[in-house]
Length: 284
Image (tube, rainbow, N blue to C red):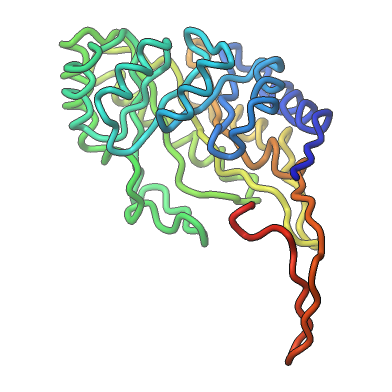
């Protein structure tokens, strides 16, 4: 069976919200794929979190949990039209992964006033790690050069505000990661705002911050991460306070607070000693 520490999970959400309280529009959209457990998701929603969904089953789960307008961020590759339509019906913020998704969105549900665009920074923000690799090799997001034309098209179709989203690593303990990603997205957002004449509503820093798995590793200091992001925010926007910050952290929120509890049922002695369990890797 699985055992979760609800108090620890709630505290992690509260610490994240407190760290970014300086940004009035801040909100964490918990990555449902990290732990699609209704009880855990309900607890996080009670702490003010939204839900980051990437598939129809995750949208259905959010619906069953009572998610309403603005509670869902929907991001997916190769989005089927019916899933886009259903996400819009639930009031989700749509995060388009590909330029061709513009026509798909318009055809299946119409273009809302606020649309988010996932961008792949390529070599501009080279944050190689062992899980996601180099950004250019990732399947996620638009090239930066594709976005102006896409925004112009979305604007003609009814969009009045836009947002940017990027995630280039997974499970990093580098506290500077969010700040460097934020600085790059802030700069791009201001350039697009000026070029396309449509205001930037928010920047979604997504996830990527990790947890320690080894004794010599230390947890990420959220206060320091937030402080570094805040410095970049001030540099980019000056006295402006209207651009919100969003995150989609998963592992950082629940990773340290869950256990798979299993029973040893067999012992085997060959060249090594093996202990057989009544669970397997698929249970993880």
